[in-house]
Length: 376
Ligand SMILES: [Fe+2]
Image (cartoon, rainbow, N blue to C red; front, side, top):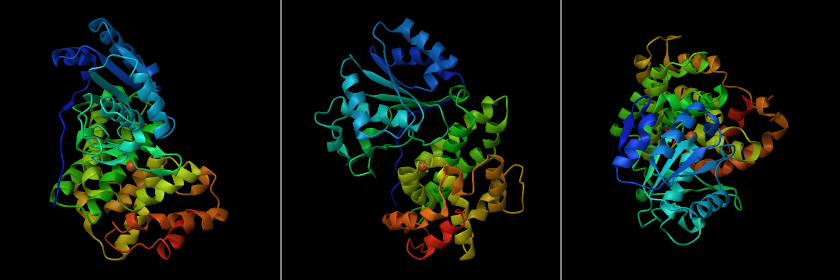
């Protein structure tokens, strides 16, 4: 068994109002802020920015697009832009894409060569510029993990820059950063985190330590996620969601992912189905598939629900996801039954990931029946 963990975490609502002081006290003078373009128009960012401007003579900002997953091409552009500035610390504030870009820029600023040469695991051998991260959605858990997810557009493959030198030096969870994000992207991000913990909990690589993290992550997220439906956000629930997503990031880094995440990936590449929502559409169907084979582990989670909507864990989750408007048919994304053959064909590449499931789920035999339930 192997369990990796390396981070210095601060979780407190409002902590980013003091980030300028923290950076100064840590001995840095030239912060580069990589901020998600969505968050950059928020009032909270305005406050943080003003504080940083007052504290530092040389303070620079790069806005990072959160619209599509970062690629090696976009990373190259951000890296070139960063080289124009004097930088001794990077502060990444945003969703998963923005944090991944901030980690990759931090990792590569002190390393020669093209980003694509660092694709894989532990290719970044020289420590880079320290990176501080603060997520604005409770989602990927990039602030907890050593992965920077990047797409290689030439091969349409997702293989990022990963490894022991890719951890953020400090992470800051602050519920105030999440309130400006619109509802559906927030739901997609948090459902993604729930998928990370649910699949990490049952996949073949799960172990005592990852299970402990997965259970606490799910407890925090399941009992707080309906805050995304309320008009007035509760900062306590928002902070719980961020803590849950952080723990889910640790689970995913250590246990890997499962069938639902693996199905979601080609659908996001070929049909633009958002990654988190895609995983959420299938995770409960896969859980039912396993349940029919006699798998019981999910029911350990029922005791974690504070206000159950049903008599068992999976039924509770089905009601919860419908309250969050997680779709259950691919027609929501314009995908019709006529696409079934193509989807089944591209899904054959996912068999190694499907093999993480505790029961055999065959891309050739089981997937066509399974996906038929989501097509009309
Ligand atoms: Fe994910």
